[in-house]
Image (tube, rainbow, N blue to C red; front, side):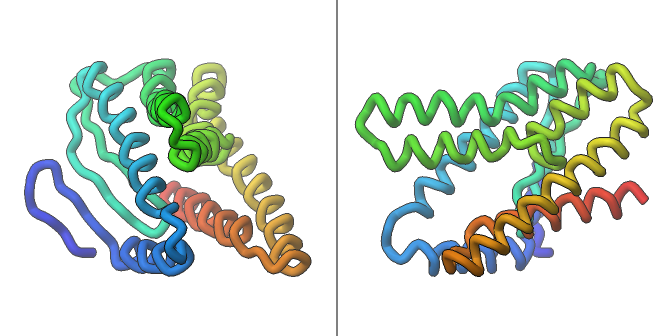
Length: 196
């Protein structure tokens, strides 16, 4: 990983750069990539604003092939409800920016912003929707059981997406869903190995 040694620490993996290159190649001049990057930036800034409001400090940012991960340090541990608010702030920022883009006539920007926010609400760890569901479960169950349950549920949902993506790739020659499902699978497997 290449590292920029400033506070907060930013790490950019070669996989992230490869992903950017592939996305640029797939964009074919349509202009999706700049709007997608802006939507992702606003999404992360929503998390940052919510974390800062709850006393959090950004210690670092990792950009990898499976997405962006903020490392936030809090002086006082957050409740599960507060963690859910931080998780929902990213999709909330996408909803606001999508609404603003639509009001200003930027339909493509609006669709991409809303798609990024909606995608992140899927109940799959490590996505924001999975984090919210985990918070709800961990508040009622043992956190280790909640983690296991969410990992199992995430694996099942991602497995279904891989299957549907494979059918779409074979039948319609469209690999978008399959690639997205494989990206999610890498995130779920990485979480499971980190827990082990």
